[in-house]
Length: 452
Image (cartoon, rainbow, N blue to C red; front, side, top):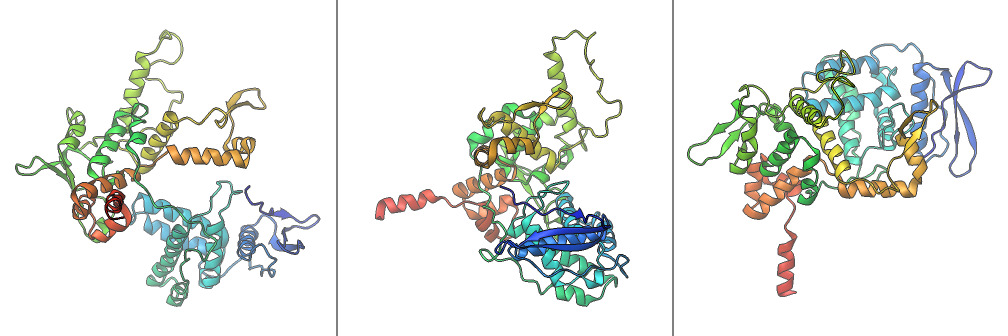
């Protein structure tokens, strides 16, 4: 069951915010005054009190000091906005997304706090909020893993390093924040994540009929080359280069994980991968991405139109939209989010939940049928059966980066560690050994059968 979080509320008869906490051992309750009701400062103080209470094992804590409503100097909100304006053009899509999540938590707890007073203790408060999550927020946030919390805390420290380098804050704040030790395995309340494993071919092949040919081509290329998904999204005909008489093509993406370090990434495309690319090379501008969501959507509509049985005089006509000017439409190339969602949707179609666990349709207050929300679905099933839903998804769903691990494992098994390192573009074989290429346990089994 999700842990119940005491509510932020207004004290009856007063214009003051209050929260009531209960000691987990003595069961004694205590009111904590937070300042004027419905102000940013009182809401931030509420989140800090909850974080301290959780970090203390839900034992009662000392009442916090209510900060001034008009702080002096640069606040955390102002600093975060300045850093975000600078960072947008510096980081890739994934890094920017992670940065946004971190800034959301930081400003939620300490937005009006003067940046000059932000020290190790406040950083620990923010870290505790990352560990425990916020299931009752407008956008619920699940608890983050230990490794991810450590990464996000270091992003906060780098903000103050950036501010010190621009003389916005004294360097002593950055130096103090560096004294925070990272969370250690088994010595904190943060959850641990399992290492990413290769995905079975049977799970991959099962979704072929539920994805577009563009998405399936990306999947096949990942399996054959070991490339990261983001390295293939912007692939254009002009980016493909042939090499001497070997018949192998090469592709060096402009944007990749280590591009900011001045390194070059080369992806080698053999005959099987070339067969995957051939249908997308004809009648296409040399600078146009090979895999276009807009083309996939147009092909889907054409198939639906071919199967149409309703007369054209009735219903929607080809080329018409439900909205005259849709706010969003399919892009010219895939993104990490759209590619992952396409695979997730296909996994749900290929491996539907058992009927007793599936989401139902309900009637709303206007007597209209709709799907039950995630919260309604989980409440109806209960925690025990919801665990079965989670287990089913874990066994049948997979994500794109598992394809890279599969390719690394296959290359290492057949051609050795050095070949896997080169194909994956790692500067050191230690990364390939430790993270990507699964060891071939069958060799150990064969040895034990002979000598054991």
